[in-house]
Length: 469
Image (cartoon, rainbow, N blue to C red; front, top):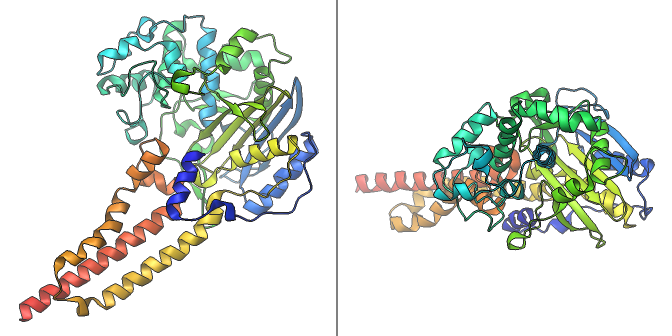
């Protein structure tokens, strides 16, 4: 969320200027009626296409429901499967622990095929993979910009040419391939496909009968098709092929996620020991890291201890939260994606506010507030561009160095993917940014187009004038 705030700051727009709605104070507890009432109000003001919500307390299911519709038009119910994105990491971590291996042992001890272009690779432990402290990162292996493999074995093989960015075990750097390697390790150690191991040791024992893990986004329901937000509207979009197994490939339902949350709160479950669950919930502390194993530790706005993990696809986002003090668990999946539609986090935070007695402030995705301003700036770009082209003849004959400032908007648009990568600590492409924040791409793109048009027009008139002379 700090990264999102940094992005918004670039536009010079205060996110706090979003609309607020007058609401009754929170009840101090999460009842099914309170959750349902909030969701219906949220959908009405944001036009959220669809969502899954699961809320538990102790060993009881408080609320499981689906809202709205899928990109294919089917009604979403509590039994509709949707992608969990990076919530999958917490399930993968538990699957690794179920193998019984020594997580402080070297990965190569169990997975000899795991090699990288770095002599330090042999020092990476299984714990490093799960705690995101292996030293791998997007800076040396930009996975989401590379051709997607089809299997875990191929995904691990692709790492052979990548170096590490830091010494293993010294710094947390969030990187999806950590969990792809962990999933492949499970396959090799158990001798069965990762999906089968998950079904036999995690999904089956917990009664998550509608949950599975898949290799690529093409294997997701509807091939991952969902929505993005732009200018206050939701736009249906397909999802490009990404390899997701191990790291963000689990598909589940609200009903199954309720079973998962109950297990994580260690209530009504004898499948996993308290020690095993506690291991996955304990932050590594490496360099002050709050990352555990598919969870991140922290506190709520009211100061209560909290475990949380979020997930992003280009067309979906998700969040799961545990509140150990009260025994509540919350899981939300929406079919809006990435930065522009971070609905899952907003919904989760609002439900925690209800639980802690704070009123609903009517929060909406920040792009619903910022995009109208970007639309104005986009029109201003076009207007200034047309004016500059119209006046280009008058400019002819002036020194060419005065065109240099017009290179700035062109350079900014050309480097937009790099700017986003720095802010998000993830390497992506301009095409992927059109999913994450389409209005910014259009704004910077029209700025670059207007600047280029003015430069070309002035050069044409300058050349024409010199030939005439």
